[in-house]
Image 1 (cartoon, rainbow, N blue to C red):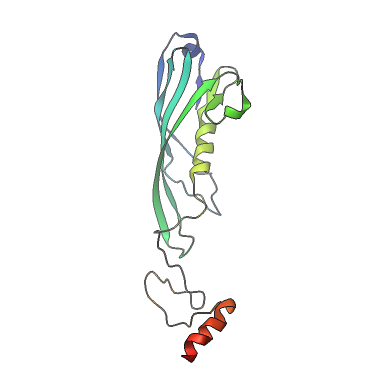
Image 2 (cartoon, rainbow, N blue to C red):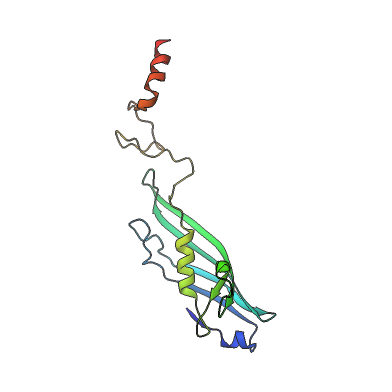
Length: 166
């Protein structure tokens, strides 16, 4: 969604409500497309004391697989994005709080795509204490315990030997 900012920057309008769904079904995470139902973007652009503010909420459902046990995972993400919209930036160090626009036009899709990509965690887990899969037999350790002998870290083998000798 491209938004023409002329009326807001010139003072003709003081606010613009935003409410739309962005299709990010082509977003790749790991090796799959986790966002099937689109990304909801709700908020507003508003002018206050000759400064233009963007205040939006981004929410979406993530459909994927647990990185430990490979079970299906559905997680809901929702977060706020607050930025100040400027035509040029005086100090390059402050660019995280600002959106620099050219030709008085804001590409909201680009911003939302970037924010969604940055919000995704490095690992997706079905639950915080997921036990994963047995490395020997492949059993899901969240569902059942297997009888496979656990490998001992070779660095700890001497300590284990001491315990067995007692």
